[in-house]
Image 1: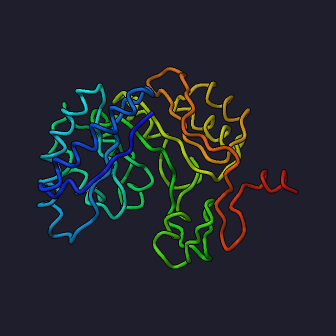
Image 2: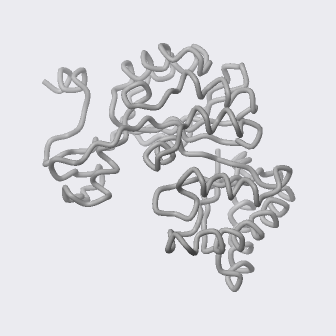
Length: 274
């Protein structure tokens, strides 16, 4: 289990409040066995200001890493589009400005790819900094019609949010070279992977994961996916050569994403509904 956490770390006047909130979150999640504090960067600013803002944020992240260690957590930054750690040069600067013994990297493969990063090369260069990986495939795919989320919210075609959701794919369906990236992540002893995307049904997802044998998640994960029926996933997987699998935050029965009023589902799901 992980704690996803964020705040305006590029604003020194907010550091004390962010630290207090982080401590409260870690104290609460300790009881559930959480061990990773996944930190989201502040929102994007003008490009010319990114380096200056990032220096302020990284000073705090080095401190926050020490705070996390007090609770038995590892803190790592999670890159996202439209945040100050988005592009490859920003990721490199973040890694340069943070202490590898105190603060880690918790990358999102889809966000990195859509920001123009070569994910396999990024993992090869910085495997020793990676503590957590959100594994999602991606291919830039403009939304041709509105997208309806499972909670009923509609994202109009033409907006960035709609294009983003349209651009996320299951492993092996997008453009990311996971067979090249996965061994690098394992070499860095990634402790947890988050595999999440409600596009394929359980059986199809299991077969995709089996095909990507380099990820070495073990048969236990495939069996788990084949024998359960939730449409949304978040599985924590040991990726250091073992096959330990622990389900986390699984939402059963949640509706699939829809495009233009039509649910986004696999051919097998459509056959089952018919």
